[in-house]
Image 1 (spheres, rainbow, N blue to C red):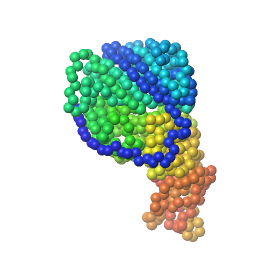
Image 2 (tube, helix red, strand yellow):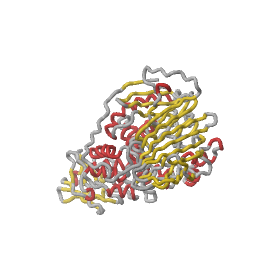
Image 3 (cartoon, rainbow, N blue to C red):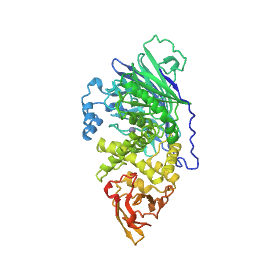
Image 4 (cartoon, protein in one colour):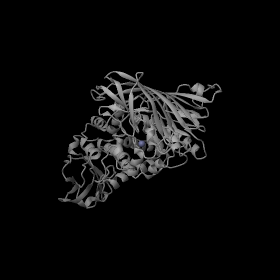
Length: 607
Ligand SMILES: [Zn+2]
């Protein structure tokens, strides 16, 4: 066990309370889980009992409630399998179709009680509908008691047993999870591969399993001094366990999901990254994996101060970077990383899954309805954070996102506002949510300017942590901090399939002492324009042309010429340079490539 001390002070969130927080009348539900789960590692059988206290803070009377039973998707012929087949995800389809009876995920409900009395329920594969015997009124709460059994499935998507890196158990989306009910009603979305949304609340989870396993989980281990495994405080010696199981007692508050994993070979290293925050690194040691997890410790502790001052403080007492699962996946207070050795993409995976604890974890948006809102922001944040660690890698990621958008920005694509479950295939989802979502943020920064943008990120965090925002709330925050109107950008980029294509049409003499530059908008999404003029004498200057519909301007650096706004519907714009055309070497629009201009070869012109 390794323990480093790197104490810094919790950054105070320097956010004024000047601006409105959540909209008037905002409400959200709350749930308190108490789960007792037992795992038999011979049969992979799981027995569970969940007691939920569910608070109805909505203005509506609820006559039924819904639960997710995600593991029911892990079987041949499931809706997830059909969907994978239709969406040409052959890997997933084949993996699900090949599952033997002993490898499927099955969640079988024994009983559901409402306040101690049995109620009727109906299981529709991954969704359980419970008809309440007594309606749940606004302001009231219910206690639901669910007994279930399950079989831990083979690891074909996200969690399961025996992950690609060899981790014995990755318990993700594993318990009957309350569906979210919000201003749009119930979100009883079937699990067909994507995506997640939960109710904020607390978890108390007791995990009983053979004592040889070490467990990593969401939350803080409550009986660390008895369990040990590196969770105990320095100097504490756990008592010997003469039994054959351990009961691991975890607790977490202000989270909307709970994951855990277990392996007999896990090692556990931890770093106190600052006052009140311990980072845990839990993995199966090997010649390939150990150096990766050691480097991860260095990287994450170095990046933490930047992350907290840029995106908002991490508000839980611990975070765990855990080897396990299939591909990287975010969970509150932990991530499961499918890392088994050196790979240039490791820092990307680590920063990406970690930053999800801001976008999705603490700011709990609906990942299914607005996948871009967490994947786009997380991808942006990961690249932004990597600029503090490995500039070349960050630059590569930035260009990758822009190139992906440039290559595929055509009108046959699906809009970014498509819910995750409805994308035609994985490729479209990935392109829209990740690449186009990331570029949405970089372009937003270009439009409002870095200072207002960074301020907006902190305001968004301050207004929406432990809550459930939508994309328009992010937009409103950015409008407030920048003093600009941004709905034209949101409408074109998120809701519709508009594309950016600007060009320099002509550079001609305007009399003997001036030059007239004609700029042209060939595209369907207008943007403020930045123009760089190079002169024959080696000097250069910058010009900034805001859009009229912005009703404002970003902060302009000293020496940049600001011009009258470009009317958004006008195809062309005339820019006058106070030098003769003979002095002009070249004129280039968007020279820093901050817009996803689909046709760049018309962006630069010589007279
Ligand atoms: Zn992600």
